[in-house]
Length: 248
Image 1 (tube, rainbow, N blue to C red):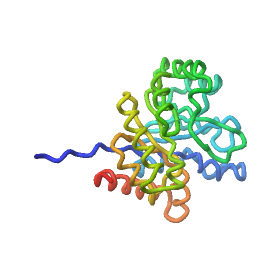
Image 2: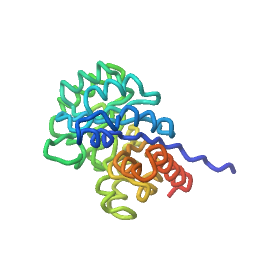
Image 3: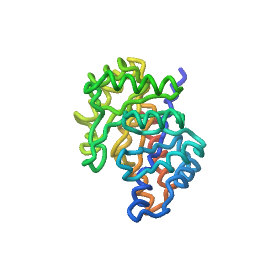
């Protein structure tokens, strides 16, 4: 009997954290657009950037340049506001991932509240999809959020791995991710994951067979201080491939 080949898993690199360093001095370096090219050269499957409403890291000019210059695919993270939807429709990235935002948070602290204003959220998704943009929702690994994402018209979900990152290994957080991934896949949704993932904790998430894409940023930029960004990307890809191949 021929062994089943594991499904490949994509690595999208979030370059927000490069822009965070630049914005510390409001200068021109390091350049997140150049960082995106380095990541692609090192084997990244896509580039992710989150244009926050308060513009704390990624700026409008960055998004314009990334959309024009990316050679793989651009995953545009944004809040579901009229202004952001209009910008996405104009730029036409490969994918938009709708995420929650709170001005006082240091980083995204949880998944999108898909039950808060479903009519407005469905309208944003419809506008994006009508422009030919693939739409994902960043959600907690909760069965009700998975079901709601499908009902709202999303094509993909990104499961928030923050709780797992704080409590890695076997346990309730990993079990929740596995269950939500299975539900999403069975509902016809593409399943992505991200937040707080590192080389040390990525293997169990990578081994979830329904997960087809990881979005990772902070760890790669942190690791780049020691080994450089291209090598950090290569290390992560190697860890992901090993875990996927081993199925654990």
